Image 1 (cartoon, helix red, strand yellow):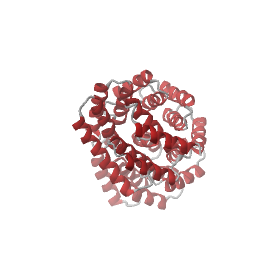
Image 2 (tube, helix red, strand yellow; image 1 turned 30 degrees about the horizontal axis):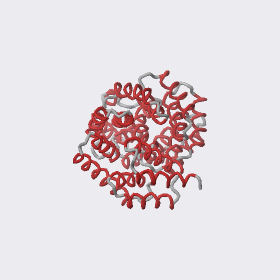
Image 3 (spheres, rainbow, N blue to C red; image 1 turned 180 degrees about the horizontal axis):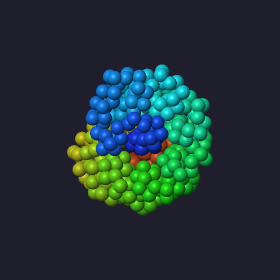
Image 4 (cartoon, rainbow, N blue to C red; image 1 turned 90 degrees about the vertical axis):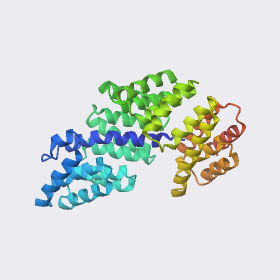
Length: 373
């Protein structure tokens, strides 16, 4: 199961660079702008290091270096710089918010909330911090709180396309698809080149089984960003549902080139290979999907997204008893309603391709019964 919240983690990160730049434009007047525009982060870091050797407490330089570390996924280094900035100026609202964003990207959501709360207490109209806190609540599946923050941010500034798209994504996760489409429509009207919003609307159409409209949006998103692995993979899933197996395979191949360790993409490509009567290649991809999901299961056996994924992979390779054991374990440990619903949707997609799969039908019934208890 490539759960919806999990899908958007990468999308949210991709958009973070843009939102952080908007935030930092207000505060880092000493930034070596030319270097950052050209993404020459290493040269910028050298310049900031020189400045900090002369003045180790130069607040704006520390903050900007921390931001670059964040872009480079060097989160611990970023936190050190933000910690120092906030030690020097405890009321530096933007630094608090960006440190919160760093924690969010590290999936340290409670720490992220503390920083966003402090930033918003200092500046209740800080739309970026409100929206980023909303994204954090969304990732924690605290959707009502997420909506409140997005609503506040949109009331302050109704032209923030990424916030509208974030609220649309939240509605989508709540299965409020009509409201989701309205927000995605507004976001795309404000910014027709927003590949993230286009893909989000495409995903909403996919979940509504409006596949032709989904394809149009994914086509546009991929045109704007040809290396958008998630959009490629999800468009491939739409092709699977439409029985356009060669087109699906082409998208999965491109996505796996970009993300070779993506277990879900290996799984759906294996399904495509099965339908195309290429069992050897299917077995290889199924094995890869099981391997990566198993490794994550050992690291965190209460990651229900991954547990349901692994169960589905075992089902696909005819290890039905192991699959059932994993499904029952997740249910016994009170996996969230959203995770169960996503698992059912994934079984529905599997059954669309293999409608007479008896074990899949039985396990779907097991999950469905858990929703009514």
